[in-house]
Image 1 (cartoon, rainbow, N blue to C red):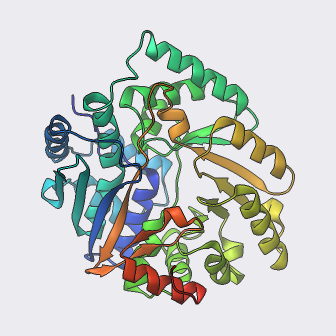
Image 2 (tube, rainbow, N blue to C red):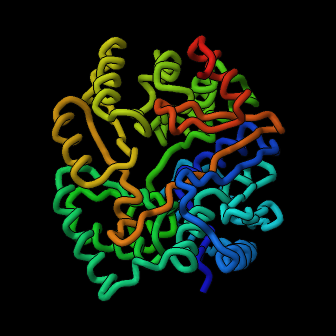
Image 3 (cartoon, one colour):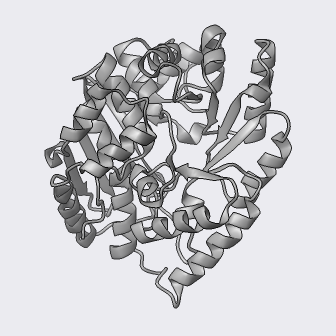
Length: 390
């Protein structure tokens, strides 16, 4: 059986973003690139052969009737035009080019119209992770590993008992079986478990698909609409596409201060809240509360979704700190679906690289998470911060 088993093996926010693209900017050409942030994780020819085989297999996936019914019922904000697209969607393996360097580093590029090209990112990362631990690093294969993983998941659920929790671990999961174990365990044990990012797993376990938008949406708009106020352009189109639903906004693509500059008036009131994905979560949460207070908006009516590299103790501590100050929920990924003491999960991303051959960037609130062409990064730094990169 192939690793990616369904077109719905996809993070929910990709469906939302695709619907927005189809409504406002279809047919725009984009490129994405794989970036291994920890290059000591070396790949080999066995990995590459298996990877290319799995990519080809994804071209045979078809959306089934029961899957369409699930999306229609659980994501009712997706309009008929998108549902028709989803019914007829096919992966095109010709959009993917993968190779190994002489040093054993993996290079992957994705090239095509955004409404189809964007679908590769998350399942491809899941492929890379699972195949890496099958072909390159097998140190996790110890006695009773599956049962021991179940026990650790139960312990994590206990620590996280006060947190409104979603599982966000598809893209860097150790394997399909591990994610399946984690979701089933959390559903059975965690009192505030609300769902998963992986739409297929949500359907399989009869929970909610969770997610709104990602950095690529803002990076895309920086070219098709304009860099300086890309945050505002995205949020305005998003409101029109979804009529006020799917209301958690991502803040840090070009730095949170730039986001807050545009997140005022109707937008701040219309969106349900914001998602944190970089820098100190306590500083971020306090700044969100201050921002709402300055706008005379009650923070207790809004939500912060914390999702930046969390583990069980850090999420529990954040929840306690902000309890009674603002609504909270937590999206936890790798800590839940790829946490083996014997080996490290890959620290990797696949990010948009260009739109219509114009380079795009992600600045983030953390220097180590900045990504993009160096010249484009300098332009963005000057545009938003009035300074050049060091």
